Amino acid sequence: MSAISLPKDGAVDTFDRFIVPLISIGLPLVLWEMLARSGAINNFLFPAPSEIFGTLWAKTGTDIDAGVMYSHVYYSMFRLLAGLGLATVLGTLIGILIGLTKWGRFIFKPLLSLFMPVPTLAWTPILLLLMGVDNKTTIFIVFIAASFEVILNVIAGIENMNVKVFWVARSMGASRLQIFFKVIIPGILPYLITGVKLGSGYAWRALIAAEMLAASSYGLGFMIYEASEFMDMTTIYGGLITIALLGYIIENVLMGALEKRTVAKWGVQVER
Amino acid sequence: MKQASASAQTGIIAPTSRPAWGGGQALVQLGRFLVPIAALLLIWEVAVRGGWIAANIFPAPSMVFARASELIFSTGPDRGMLLTHIAASLYRAIVAFGLSVLIAIPLGFLLGLLPRVYKWLSPILSLMLPLPAVAWTPILLVAFGQGDRTIITVCFLGAFFPVLYSTIQGVRSVSRQSIWVIQSMGGTRRHVLLNVLLPGSLPALISGLKLGMAHSWRTLVAAEMLAALSAGLGYMIFAARSYMDVSTMFVGIALLALIGMAIEYGIFGVLEQNTIRKWHGSSRIGGAA
Image (spheres, rainbow over the protein chains, first blue to last red):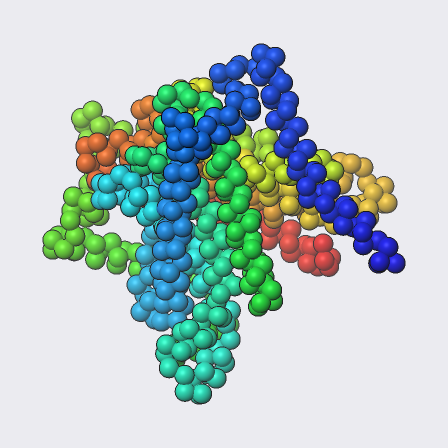
């Protein structure tokens, strides 16, 4: 029974996974192209997709722009990963301090409730004064945007840990360092990864806006903002498409793979 | 790890040992929230006055308060400026949020009820969802120029997708059986919509509204920095940068946080209490919804 229905399921699966998205995204693009070519819609505000992809292609090539696209993507990804890495390390430490120590809770809890409600990008002008234009400011914005989710999830992870695990480790004579790396970190890892995943979504949004406000040379946010000053619509649309694709890849492919591996190893899924 | 076991124990004991005197408990909770913050502000004040923190980057809370009252009460050109900024920001965020709710909720119900349409549209939606709303700003700047239209559209896009997504999830989470039950008892479409779909999807709907308003408010800051002409809290903060007027920046940051919190806890917290709690209670008596 199942042997007969299996290939059919596979066929439906490939149809849903590849054909549906292809048509769902392709059909509007084809329509748009036709409308733009026939002149039914404003060609300046809505340039044809072929022109947009042509511009993107030119930016990766060896023409005047000489692979400038790679630099934009590279800088954006570098800032995202640097900020995210910082948020993961510091957020985990702060979360553990809040979850396990009294003084940590005493110091960091009020700081959290003071800073969390502030929209991340509101810090940009102050960071600009403090650190100047470019990498430092944008990385710091990414760090702020991502760290709260990491901290909150680490705290939740610690609250859901079994105290007896500590007792076992202690009674077997584990040192503090061993408890940290062998008990706490594996114990909170599923939560930590959920936190990083959620944080990466916020971070990506914040990064693009921060690059518009505080970047001076490269970055996808900078690219589209600069293009708007020259009214270069094809570059803006090309940037938007790149940002959407990269955001999708980060959220679903990168973080999804990370999550899948932890779920496979630990057998837990953290719902938040 | 003595502390760990202690905290775990208090975590178990606290709910039962806490005396149940309604309003007073809320007051204690509020105190627990506010006292450490007040202490922190006091430390900050002392640190600035003692010269340990540079006042030209992190001004003392008293300086920020003084600047805020100056922006409201002073008799110069600044008179009432702060209120103008607040009003402009609130107006934009609320109009954007209202528009997104008006469009996203009916659309969400439609997509939730028509799984085939949803299947064909979901690839586009999942591509649009991680796209930051602020990224639309350059196109809108070219199309509309600076001003309210651009800002409101950006905030609308920021709020639209969370509301839409939550509505779809909420409608899809309503079980087919409960719809069949109502229909087999002779319920009309109206009954299904008002008595099954709406209450069933309400928790997701309200959390979507909450998320949408939060996104609208957070997107607003960036949009105002990029596209505001003369008013708005984001504009105020960004314009203050040119004069190195750090106190004004902190006035703006504090107000953005306070208003955001007031909306989240004051409006949506109360809404959640009065709807989800109520409906959830009734559905719990009748068994699983």
